[in-house]
Amino acid sequence: MSDPTEPRIFPRFEGRTVLVTGAGTGFGAEVAARAAQEGANVAIHYRSSKAGAERTLERVREAGRDGILVQADIASWDEIKRMADEVWAAFGGLDVLVNNVGDVSSEQMSWRELTQEALDAVIDVDVKGTLLMTHEFGSRMLEQGHGSIVNVGSTVIVRGSPRAPQYAAAKYGILGITKSYAKAFAPAVRVNTFAPGFMETERLLNREDWKSGRREVLLSQTPMGVIPPPEFVAGTCLWLATDEAAHLTGSYMLADGGFNMVGA
Image (cartoon, rainbow, N blue to C red; front, side):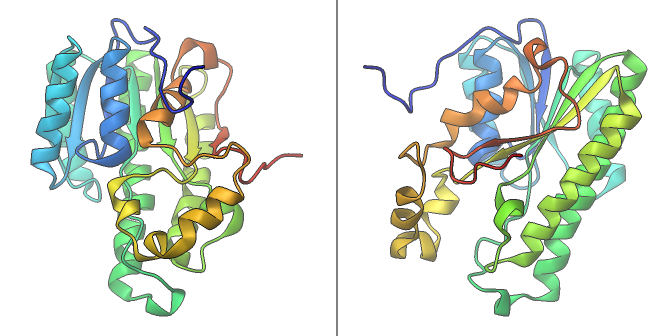
């Protein structure tokens, strides 16, 4: 019997280029590595995790693909434009953008701990950053005549977050960004939201609520019976950018082991 957390690799991105934001750590690093394993050349974005981004670049090259590092604060439109120039200069275009980077306020354990700084950080990165990245890269994809954008959302919008309401609000905002640009860029460029459930990233494993019993509670409520490592769902995220998903745009796709089961 195969291991349910062992991902299967398919050559879905041969000859294509992929940019993943926040690819120095966590889920972004796994998406970037998976894209390379599936044949893509990869631009690895980071803001401050240069050492992590360099490790991701090593993984891309170990997969036999070309890769570059691009550094930027995605809350700044000027820095996004510079990054786009660097990607186009390196690869001559871009096929797939995965807007993965996001601030989750992981240190905040209650809505009572909300601060102006925490609110601004989440809105700047998750809402402004995702919108500006979609706007800038999507418009350039439109000029080249093709492209796909995957905005990484969250299942938190289904149940809300008493821990960090600003995070739930920001992720809900990503749905509006996705739908708006999906209509604006159609049919040449598709824009979708991928919403992973809980994944056992290093950040999650170090959270106090996770270490004090929340993992066991969520595991008991997850029909698939597993809280996976990020590499297990990286391929699911990238599926939205494949030819198999060619008729999907403006969508919100859950991958949470059946925890929420949102639908009609």
